Length: 278
Image 1 (cartoon, rainbow, N blue to C red):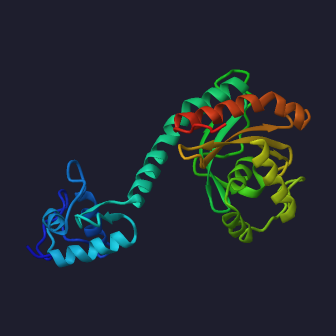
Image 2 (image 1 turned 90 degrees about the horizontal axis):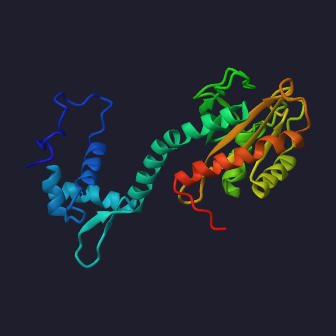
Image 3 (image 1 turned 45 degrees about the horizontal axis):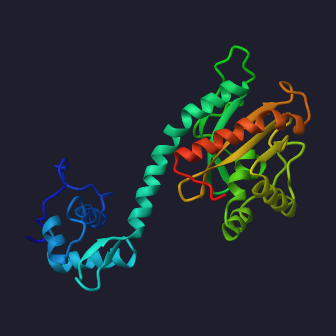
């Protein structure tokens, strides 16, 4: 059977559109062939499985091997899935697990404190909101900033953003900050890069980031990191409070909300498989 008359995947009966990549499809079909008890396959096995001739199959496998999506046993000359596929698998699991795992814990934190609670992810210089919860208590102290899942804010002047920046490696952090204009957003915005770096170092040391009117007048928030099974920081959780709701010092407010915030972030991390080393 030649590549031209190879069988198409089930469910697709029409010809590929102009935006359809046949090469990508073939590469993915090769990766999909490693399933069940077929964890180790030779070129002939793969060619039969995906309906391509051996020379064509070898070219695709050679590329996948160079990219570490498959590896070759030097003795048997057969192939098996490589570390890049494992990384993708864990990333997919984590992306599906995080919202599901975090949702009830975020709601419980909002109900316990009465304040608005959010969770965000890093996307370059921004923090992207993926969940936002208001308290179900009648005496809710929640605030409405017209933020929702999908909203973006600059990372440098938000508590969640500072958490996510603080745990970046130095090279990545430098590249991100090179793209950022540290414009003043609130009365206490950090607009000096050296001062911001010092603030991020403090976040790494304490495990909590504070936003004291850096994003907007009167707005304060506290954020803590969420770790995955590898120890990487994959998200941040915050509690937002407005001065009109809690007209007190930052230290007093921190004493009120930080214990529950830390506990919630740690529990989300634990359910994602994180086990602290100390």
